[in-house]
Length: 242
Length: 364
Image 1: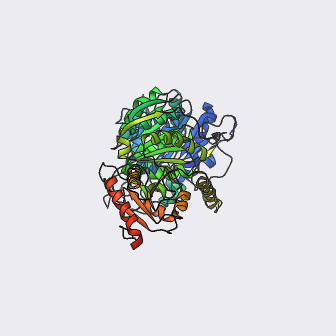
Image 2: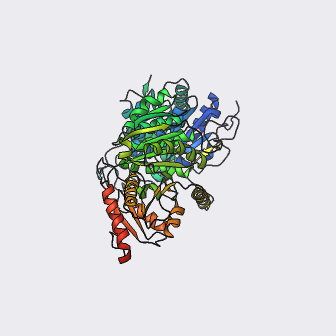
Image 3: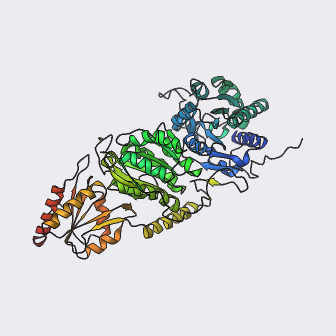
């Protein structure tokens, strides 16, 4: 077997930091789109956050959305073009803070879209502020004493929260912090696209990912943080599959 | 063949939009425009289109962002507080140069205000309510016939210029009913092909719709210059207004929308009294029809602005005549409606007072 760059992934350098998980997740999405043969009928939506430049890396039609609004934009596209494949690629601030309403209601309507949710427990692009998924006690530039000291509340568990709704068809949390996790993540992403092709409705894959730069950790320590800390708070697994 | 129909303004708007080929509507309930989403909810499926009751005004306008990017003629509607929420999305849609129609059946403000008609959102509509340098084409119907006709045109303006178009109505226009000739839709322009839409890259290079311009460092400057060039073209090409008895008028009354209608009645009565009054009523308030004002300023002694707000429209009137004539003001926000008598009284005052110097209520 030959190791090749997926056609859906452009042959360019990314702006992502060393040790960041976005590159892995981009590649998994691109591989799945290639394997399913849907690149020419796929429309992606880019978020505001580190993945805003998704269109520089993905070789398919892309629309860049306002912060948190990709599920609404994707709804508009998918309802107009129901035979196309529409996915959102969002970070934790985009999906679970400023866009929480759009996420919940797109899920509740059972919109036939695929949501790739990259949870790295921090605001990356703006320089390391608290995310809705920042862990209790975790340092960030806006929780200098650790989350939980100033009434911030705890991390939002998106899969658990959405699993209370009847609308979603598939919710799974995966990680990209070990080779085994990466393989599992790819299976989940593939299933989330297959569900859309089959017209089954709203599928979301939450991917626990590393942000060594804003966590102020080395890439190796960041991987350990996902495996030892994040997976404890955000258990991996399937939360809904119907 | 056109057919005569009788509907409330909000319902008529739905029929006009569907006639114009609108096939995507997303909205959120707010008084006084609830008949729009209500009628859309059954008319859109009948017409083979999409209706979505969004979770918020923000979501609704972003659904339009997607629907327009996918190539559909699309519309959302709301009233003042809801239009405030939509401003984020309007800025993005303008920046991305996507066509869509946004309807504001204005109510009293600021804040939650009330549900009476008002024109307090004029600045928001014509000066750019969201962030950044952008413009909307803002249509201002005063009758239901104009609402019908301008709604048909709105989709063409949007597609022709690839720009959001706002229909700036008010609660009276939305709630009133009067007979309308429902003309069949005929395009106003030869419309350009939609060669920008995202429908999958089969047989072509992938397309991107974006509003972020980081590199090179002057790319956003260049993008803004392109937008400004387009806005200048709109200003050259769009000038919609009604002129009535202006040729020899000493006093020019000017108003848009519902007050424009009331003002016309007052001008007719003034003429019967032998007073040389005339009316300029813009049907589009951005681009603003500067020419009839400049012409009128050559011989008119005074202008009278009537608006259901506290001096917003008057600024564009003063700019249009470059402050060459005194401009009197009659207006209040919060659900106040002008009467013919009030306007007529002002006309009499201006016509009589001009020899002694203008003493009408003048907005400083």
